[in-house]
Length: 146
Ligand SMILES: [Zn+2]
Image 1 (cartoon, helix red, strand yellow):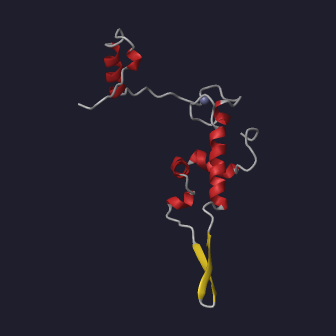
Image 2 (cartoon, protein in one colour):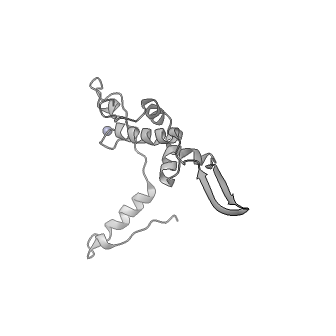
Image 3 (cartoon, helix red, strand yellow):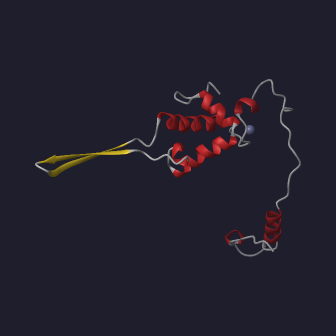
Protein backbone atom coordinates (compact mmCIF):
# COMPACT_ATOMS: atom_id res chain seq x y z
CA UNK A 1 0.00 0.00 0.00
CA UNK A 2 2.88 2.36 0.75
CA UNK A 3 3.83 2.46 -2.92
CA UNK A 4 0.27 3.43 -3.88
CA UNK A 5 -0.20 5.79 -1.00
CA UNK A 6 -0.21 9.41 -1.93
CA UNK A 7 1.09 12.25 0.14
CA UNK A 8 -1.37 13.52 2.73
CA UNK A 9 -3.21 10.26 3.36
CA UNK A 10 -2.53 9.36 6.97
CA UNK A 11 -1.72 5.63 7.22
CA UNK A 12 -3.09 5.35 10.75
CA UNK A 13 -6.49 6.65 9.71
CA UNK A 14 -6.49 4.42 6.63
CA UNK A 15 -5.84 1.41 8.88
CA UNK A 16 -8.73 2.47 11.12
CA UNK A 17 -11.07 2.80 8.14
CA UNK A 18 -10.01 -0.66 7.04
CA UNK A 19 -10.51 -2.25 10.46
CA UNK A 20 -13.65 -0.40 11.60
CA UNK A 21 -16.60 -0.70 9.17
CA UNK A 22 -18.80 1.46 11.41
CA UNK A 23 -16.30 4.29 11.35
CA UNK A 24 -15.93 3.92 7.60
CA UNK A 25 -19.72 4.11 7.18
CA UNK A 26 -19.75 7.32 9.22
CA UNK A 27 -17.02 8.95 7.12
CA UNK A 28 -18.66 7.80 3.89
CA UNK A 29 -22.01 9.19 5.07
CA UNK A 30 -20.39 12.57 5.70
CA UNK A 31 -18.81 12.41 2.25
CA UNK A 32 -22.15 11.54 0.65
CA UNK A 33 -23.84 14.42 2.44
CA UNK A 34 -21.01 16.80 1.60
CA UNK A 35 -20.46 17.76 5.23
CA UNK A 36 -17.56 17.46 7.62
CA UNK A 37 -17.70 14.26 9.70
CA UNK A 38 -18.03 16.25 12.91
CA UNK A 39 -21.33 17.61 11.58
CA UNK A 40 -22.78 14.12 11.98
CA UNK A 41 -22.13 14.48 15.69
CA UNK A 42 -24.10 17.70 15.82
CA UNK A 43 -21.24 20.16 15.54
CA UNK A 44 -22.17 23.55 14.08
CA UNK A 45 -19.68 26.20 13.02
CA UNK A 46 -19.48 29.13 15.38
CA UNK A 47 -20.29 32.55 13.97
CA UNK A 48 -19.10 35.85 15.33
CA UNK A 49 -20.46 39.14 14.06
CA UNK A 50 -18.76 42.45 14.74
CA UNK A 51 -20.88 45.59 14.30
CA UNK A 52 -19.31 48.93 13.54
CA UNK A 53 -21.17 52.13 14.34
CA UNK A 54 -20.54 55.70 13.35
CA UNK A 55 -22.31 58.24 15.54
CA UNK A 56 -24.70 55.54 16.70
CA UNK A 57 -25.54 54.43 13.18
CA UNK A 58 -24.65 50.93 12.01
CA UNK A 59 -22.23 51.31 9.11
CA UNK A 60 -20.85 47.86 8.78
CA UNK A 61 -21.13 44.35 10.13
CA UNK A 62 -18.63 41.59 9.54
CA UNK A 63 -19.50 37.99 10.26
CA UNK A 64 -16.73 35.47 10.62
CA UNK A 65 -17.73 31.84 10.45
CA UNK A 66 -15.64 28.96 11.69
CA UNK A 67 -14.45 26.77 8.80
CA UNK A 68 -16.56 23.70 8.08
CA UNK A 69 -13.59 21.41 7.64
CA UNK A 70 -11.17 20.98 10.51
CA UNK A 71 -7.73 19.49 10.00
CA UNK A 72 -9.10 16.21 11.39
CA UNK A 73 -12.06 16.24 9.00
CA UNK A 74 -9.74 16.80 6.06
CA UNK A 75 -7.52 14.00 7.29
CA UNK A 76 -10.51 11.62 7.38
CA UNK A 77 -11.44 12.47 3.79
CA UNK A 78 -7.86 12.01 2.67
CA UNK A 79 -7.81 8.69 4.52
CA UNK A 80 -11.00 7.64 2.74
CA UNK A 81 -9.30 8.30 -0.59
CA UNK A 82 -6.32 6.29 0.63
CA UNK A 83 -8.54 3.49 1.88
CA UNK A 84 -10.28 3.18 -1.49
CA UNK A 85 -6.95 3.26 -3.29
CA UNK A 86 -5.74 0.45 -1.04
CA UNK A 87 -8.50 -1.93 -2.15
CA UNK A 88 -7.91 -4.68 -4.66
CA UNK A 89 -8.90 -3.40 -8.12
CA UNK A 90 -10.76 -6.64 -8.90
CA UNK A 91 -13.71 -5.44 -6.83
CA UNK A 92 -13.52 -8.12 -4.12
CA UNK A 93 -13.50 -5.42 -1.45
CA UNK A 94 -10.38 -6.68 0.32
CA UNK A 95 -7.14 -4.75 0.77
CA UNK A 96 -4.81 -5.27 -2.19
CA UNK A 97 -1.90 -5.82 0.18
CA UNK A 98 -3.68 -8.96 1.41
CA UNK A 99 -5.11 -10.23 -1.87
CA UNK A 100 -1.94 -9.67 -3.86
CA UNK A 101 0.62 -10.62 -1.24
CA UNK A 102 3.28 -12.91 -2.63
CA UNK A 103 3.18 -15.10 0.46
CA UNK A 104 -0.53 -15.62 -0.02
CA UNK A 105 -1.33 -18.93 -1.66
CA UNK A 106 -5.03 -18.28 -1.83
CA UNK A 107 -5.82 -20.27 1.29
CA UNK A 108 -6.11 -17.16 3.41
CA UNK A 109 -9.52 -16.53 1.93
CA UNK A 110 -12.53 -18.78 2.05
CA UNK A 111 -15.77 -18.53 0.15
CA UNK A 112 -18.83 -19.44 2.21
CA UNK A 113 -21.75 -21.12 0.45
CA UNK A 114 -23.88 -18.69 -1.55
CA UNK A 115 -27.18 -17.37 -0.31
CA UNK A 116 -29.94 -17.29 -2.89
CA UNK A 117 -31.83 -14.08 -3.45
CA UNK A 118 -35.43 -15.17 -3.92
CA UNK A 119 -36.44 -11.83 -5.44
CA UNK A 120 -33.72 -12.08 -8.10
CA UNK A 121 -34.64 -15.69 -8.75
CA UNK A 122 -38.26 -14.74 -9.39
CA UNK A 123 -37.15 -11.88 -11.66
CA UNK A 124 -34.83 -14.05 -13.76
CA UNK A 125 -37.53 -16.71 -14.12
CA UNK A 126 -40.09 -14.13 -15.23
CA UNK A 127 -37.64 -12.53 -17.69
CA UNK A 128 -36.94 -15.92 -19.29
CA UNK A 129 -40.60 -16.08 -20.36
CA UNK A 130 -40.17 -12.87 -22.38
CA UNK A 131 -36.91 -13.72 -24.17
CA UNK A 132 -38.63 -14.09 -27.54
CA UNK A 133 -40.63 -10.87 -27.38
CA UNK A 134 -39.45 -7.96 -29.53
CA UNK A 135 -36.79 -5.87 -27.78
CA UNK A 136 -36.92 -7.71 -24.44
CA UNK A 137 -34.19 -5.42 -23.12
CA UNK A 138 -36.69 -2.52 -23.31
CA UNK A 139 -39.01 -4.14 -20.80
CA UNK A 140 -39.02 -2.48 -17.40
CA UNK A 141 -39.20 -4.90 -14.51
CA UNK A 142 -39.94 -4.75 -10.85
CA UNK A 143 -40.18 -7.36 -8.15
CA UNK A 144 -42.83 -7.24 -5.46
CA UNK A 145 -43.27 -9.33 -2.39
CA UNK A 146 -46.32 -11.55 -2.31
ZN1 LIG B 1 -9.53 -8.69 -5.34
